[in-house]
Image 1 (cartoon, helix red, strand yellow):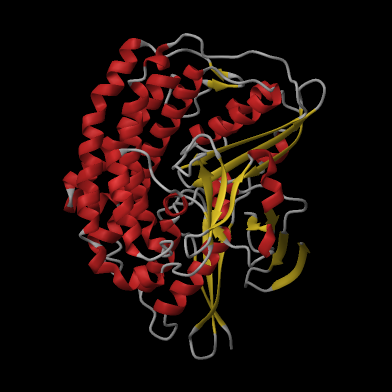
Image 2 (tube, helix red, strand yellow; image 1 turned 30 degrees about the vertical axis):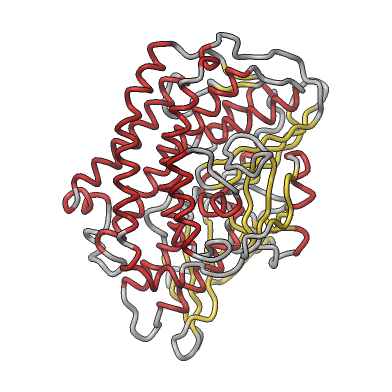
Length: 474
């Protein structure tokens, strides 16, 4: 008889999900599914809201990466107003987004994933967590807390509060940067530099302990996508879309933000409340691609800051062509933290950032607007349509985690087939199935949105577990 192993919930991630592994009669894994089991539906309940409310409303999509939604929503509203925001506002938005990257990457690496590296994938689960890390490696735990604190404090100094700020708005930002806050930001950067360099140096010594995981953690050919600058440089805030293949060759370049639907399609499956984006030219599901730190380092021609460029060059030596193993998301994430330190320092020292002209004002001049920015987990797309009164009539959110949905599902299957033996089940086998998901640092509360009719299943179950009736909408 076919058997199943269900991992519910997946631990040390942001949001609610489970993994189902299907076994054959010999106890070998034949299929795997990553289920996102929560539903929120921001796409629908923002309808009817004024466009001016969208940035602050969209920030509520997530408590971990509210700034990312704030930035993408503000850019979509800029497009609806058809304005060019002031230079100071652009510099301030960029700085805010960099601080968001820093704090979120610190949470992912130190709090959620580093226990696997310190204790091993087969380590005692009672210790393999942030509390165990604090006991075994207090300096590392303190580094993680401090780095996240720095990122969050920069957000607060810029935007007024750390979570769900409403500072970036249609046309720019609400308030200019105060001189004393700029000096406070500059004073924190040496600590951030030290932590990022120290952690990178340590992590590169750990590769030899995880060669099997690196070989099997979603180590397969896919496309990679992200924002890119006009000269192929690494980009978080602006730019156009680039797709590269597994050999590192550019497949499609400089796709304008408002043309994303020409290249990206969205599918749904009955086992998940998260959409499945795909590259249209290859169809579904062959158009699988990845986004996020690994993808961003694979598609760019340079990082654009000295320390990050040096680390990026070393990273690209891991493999000829693109770096394929999703295990290396962690490595890429640490390089991005160093990049954030360098870019925040560069931006904060730009005299133009202190201008008090930080917002362009206009009425709605277009009925449709798209805003794209890079979030910690990858490319974030906000697309709105409005009526003549400036009220939202339709919204589509293509969330960073959603882009990786196909890759996460296929990655779980690859890991399970490599490590899971249904006849001799061990906890470490299942931890690896969760660890491949943690590589992507999914934010599932962000990513659960309706597309047409959402799948729905209702079961009437007797006290002894017998299903007597079922209603299913697909």
